[in-house]
Length: 134
Figure 1 (cartoon, rainbow, N blue to C red):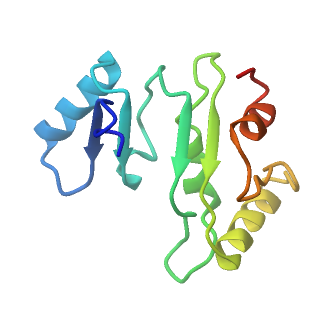
Figure 2: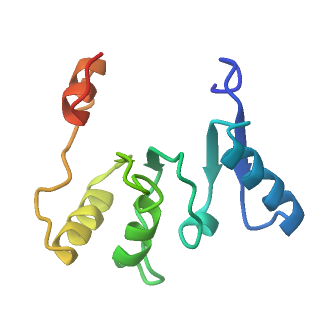
């Protein structure tokens, strides 16, 4: 849908060879592409100053099904670097994922830190949450 709307989008995953990954990252860092969709391959070890939003499609879990707070931190830590504001949006689709998110909050001693946005929310609701004007 992003591409159909005219946005420049790249994707990156572990099955790509290193030269293809390097090209994708170069394009993203330079601003040639504005959206980067990636797997956990980029959850650690990359700093891109322009990242202002990370959207998590699923909550990170360890083998065995327990919450993985370290991976969560590394994923959301891609945003808001170098003194810039950044936001993380977690797409939580069931009670199990909500419990995983709550365990991560508890692990970091940040209970009730992550704010829930009801399904019937609109752009104004998001703007209030992010403290911006629309």
